Image 1: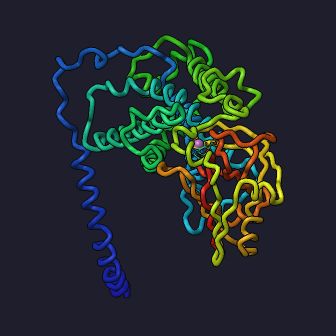
Image 2: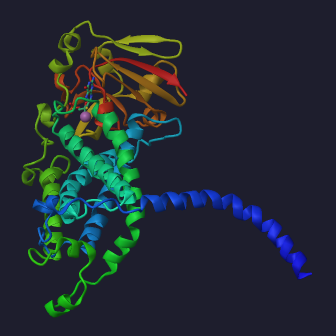
Image 3: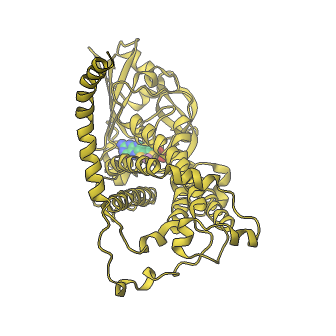
Length: 438
Ligand SMILES: Nc1nc2c(c(=O)[nH]1)N[C@H]1C(S)=C(S)[C@@H](COP(=O)(O)O)O[C@H]1N2
Ligand SMILES: [Mo]
């Protein structure tokens, strides 16, 4: 009886054991091979920073690195999420619906994107400082698993640095060092950085938990009695600034960078924001300008007395002069221009509601409106107003700014101003509007 049972069990178990086990064994074998120690380089190479006792700070250790990691992780997560929002609004997938309200939502998400990115510069610097002695560990690599881990870390550090450097160059509008298209490079590298960060988090989770749970020693004798954690021991650290001092310095630097730049979107801070790339109240009519009329090459077309707006519907086409536009029902709204570069400023706009223009060419239901500029070239000469924005009475073809005729640099003869929308889509010097029912 028992033998029969055994045999039956054996029969059912054997294929189960063989099938899933063999790839696992192959993997185990591979790992074992990868874990075989690599030859240690000769001691003559153990010079400079590779010498034992080169790094002396006692602040370094799992606790400091984990704490900085939490801050940096939070900043990166906000930066990534808000970056995805900005990308989604500018390149909407078919399922992506971006509302037209609250009017300043994009101003907040993009302000956060740039602020968390800038704060990350300080936090990443501190975190790299806390671990860089590991670059000079002896032996430099132990086995192939170690080589893979270090290569993964190199990807993480390189992509994180790339994101911060290109982001800062972009808000400084300095494109010479970037021989690539910034938005695409910044977008795709963000995915690589986040992927590398998640792998890093998973691999380091035990160390992070240990680092965050460990209570720092309170008194010197206790500190001497307590075993030093690995990083400190590796670094041979005994002196220098305390862990708390380093944390406060990093937090102080991040806060300073944030305040010193936040004035580009928070008007009240502009006086204490010497590093802000833009001042929100500098420019014609008290509003900054990104692309000037001369730069866009539209001066002649925009000032041509024969200018007519081309307004297309599904069956009709209308030509409207500036006077005719001004004779239509006018709406005045306070709306911000919120540039992807992080600066933003609110202004008072007056013009014709886009949904009234749609009605003028016979479209009353949901519709999108395609916008084209007088500008011949350039990436931002066209945009699309999606149905929620077309339906919103605050979406304007603006003719006036702060009660005055639009300055040429702000889009004269008319421009798009819509609530909750990135600056790049607030098309200036509008030539044509095409209403497409949805
Ligand atoms: N035709 C056209 N419209 C444009 C641009 C452009 O380059 N061409 N730049 C956009 C960008 S990036 C921003 S931030 C806003 C700025 O508007 P402002 O110059 O009136 O402040 O205009 C947008 N409208
Ligand atoms: Mo912009």
